Length: 424
Ligand code: LLP
Image (cartoon, rainbow, N blue to C red; front, side, top):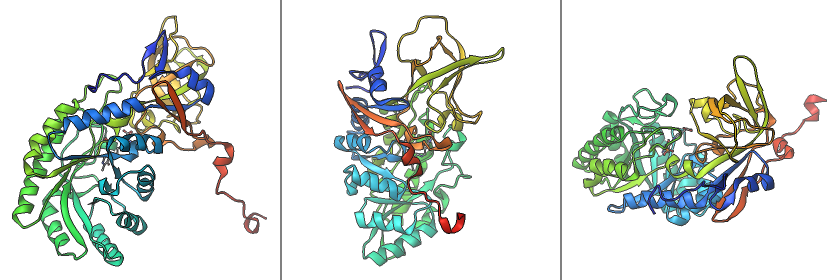
């Protein structure tokens, strides 16, 4: 099936569905706000990417940060995905979801000893090391545990990914990785450390990239580095190209999987390396919607607002990155559209899901779906304003399952106590 062939959220008889299940049925049964994911869409995206890289030795390590729900991770793992993790917690989740440790890579600027130890014990495929200080720490921990750690340096090629500044990571000014021109010295140090095995080179320049040229530019530099490292005796067998491939939220036209693969393989395909990919958003964004109900409509002479029961604590992307995400009524509504801000109940002016969006008149209880919310949606949610976090549902064909129950008020205070010796 091609990327476009699977319609995860079809509109049938005027009502939006997730695969074969009416979203209204899910909202009635599970309540709102609820994230709804399509298993079929996850599989179709994974297969399209795997097919684009079929001609080479490639491992798709799904970046759990985009959506770490166990059922989502399991769906991708069942297709053959490994995992890219960024914390001990994500490692725990990847393993819990059944990911093969030999297909897990660990990236992150601040790995703690306990996190390093857990990854060493699990026997993961690759540590993407982000500083020389971390390299020494990893060597010490591996020595302590009596194992050899496979390492790559995350190199920072100083390429502008042309995306939102908060999600650009490959610039000289960013906290990630080591500058690429310092890499030869850093690899020499790695080679001299007894408990490490130099295995690859890693690079991730940013997220939501909608052009291939920054990937091609960055990887051209990585290619030159691999050749230089090999000429000084390093056995480089892996190139980890990171994640970052963008998706359509409103009118972006990101490269296709095939165009992306052509750019990656054009740059590093002749090195004879295994290619590791770390896609997050591309696999999961379009596989999810956030389902929310209208509470009130209100307005004044300057503005109209639709107040819904989902808020910035459920979906922070519009507030944090000014991301414009498409919102559609679940049931077809007659009437003239007008420009509204879709806002949540949280006590912040930054609490909006959309600004100046054309929507038809919506009455109390009407359902809205925020599209392409399967990535960095629930994963970035919080309990701000003491709001229990949303439920998550996975649909497969004409069936659905709640894969995370809605939090309760008791969940909100779990772990808290009022110490009598301090407060009387
Ligand atoms: N690998 C590394 C080392 C990363 O830092 C990231 C994302 C990925 C892979 C996956 O990137 P993706 O394929 O999803 O673009 N919260 C932001 C996105 C933050 C991305 C952080 N790193 C958003 O909602 O737009």
